[in-house]
Image 1 (cartoon, rainbow, N blue to C red):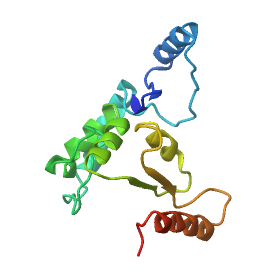
Image 2: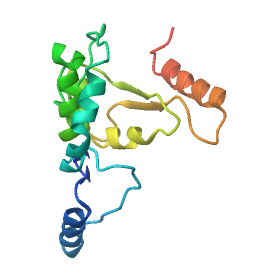
Image 3: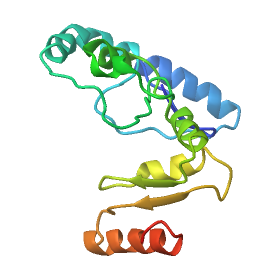
Length: 165
């Protein structure tokens, strides 16, 4: 499961179970949309590969974050356990608390949100987690558009909001 926002929840699991939930939701007039994904992450479907994942995770050298980091596993400020294999095993199986993470960032005083990646899909979901008009939501890239142009537009937006000097 992924809790992306007040009106955006991803249900993950066995296909038959997910289809049953979809049927119930649709009979209640709740809109659903299937996602094209490779695996049912954050569900019991991942159990079969956890031992292999753990073997690999135990070979990784972890370091604690050097800056404040919000955990999407808890939706709160990350603790030292984020730099452990067990954290990532748990993350693979437990719900993603994206909405709580955005709320926590806002509670810490953050108002500018920059999505780094080729498809700024999290910006729309993140903006739905806070009151309308709260936050500045900026992409750094958009597929099919000039990278330089998008970066300049976002920098321009930051400048007019007094964030760049």
